[in-house]
Image 1 (cartoon, rainbow, N blue to C red):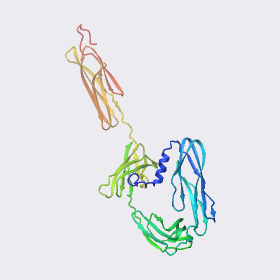
Image 2: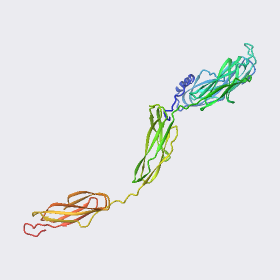
Image 3: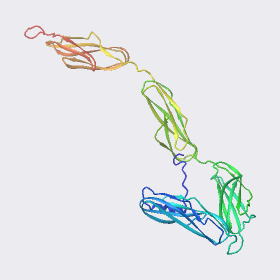
Image 4: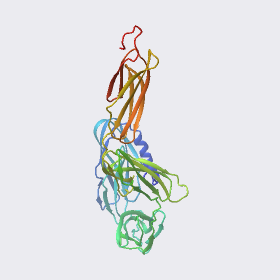
Length: 452
């Protein structure tokens, strides 16, 4: 899976590499120095005198950035061996050049080989190989000529199906000590070629990692000296992918037609064939990738598992929107589309006061009086509003009205008053229009004067 479910532990480093890593970690230079190495030179590269001393050299170039820079290196040899890791320290900054050397003495025999310099710290880099050839005939110490025994060359192979690989094992034998060049041939094609120093008998190996099912044969061929070949070793490699399979699918909401804005929801399913761990995914919205999110599979049930996810789309106008889900490091689901059709909003309802608002004061046991009034509101459609009646500037009634359709509603009031005085009553819509009606006194004054 994208994160955790498909993760595999990193291979353990060799002892030499660990040692180099410790040396590298001791440097505190920032940034890390740049390192390069020249091609390894062998001197002499071709000799027919014995004993002969061959010196291998290579120049290391380091671009340092100040302080102390520790350089670790070792020699790689054609027979598969490696020298011990060596170090030296450079001080200051700038470009530094250091030439390192290693010498080997050959007392006799015919052999070919190579050496290369490998810098391990502060950066890992390996030089091109420096080849050499020594042709001295018989060894001085025993006088016996070294000849590869072509009758004892053999090869074996076995299959590790779980790891989808086959390791070919060959044994080279010789009557003495000498260099032998060989190659591995798999199904008629050369897959590896090298040279090793054989001390009577030595095993050589080659690993086939085809990443898919493969069957066939392998042969170990001696190139120099002689041209012997082993018998064919047949193999059959079965590659089974045990990694969990993760996939995603998306469903679109049904098409919508109605009032807007509206929120629609896409739903998705993330599935795993087996295993446990975290899977990262992200929504692709109309071709634009969103941020990474994650779901966790606990592995319970030891089989197929799924998790549901969702993503919302808010539409303020008619249109479409597309969604898909991408699995981190994996596949992307198919794309689905949602559609919204927004209906035109109906015109806003209006309301107003109809003509004919009436107000009247009557006697209520002079000098007391009573004022009554009636007014009507007309609405063109659904609407909510508040109306008030005010008597001489003071609100005497407030009422909330709700129209569910076109129509008329009447609102009346009755309030005690001073029958000796006239006044006015106001009927209004809060936040809207109003109308004012005057009324007269209905009681005579105590001195006999007419009603005001």
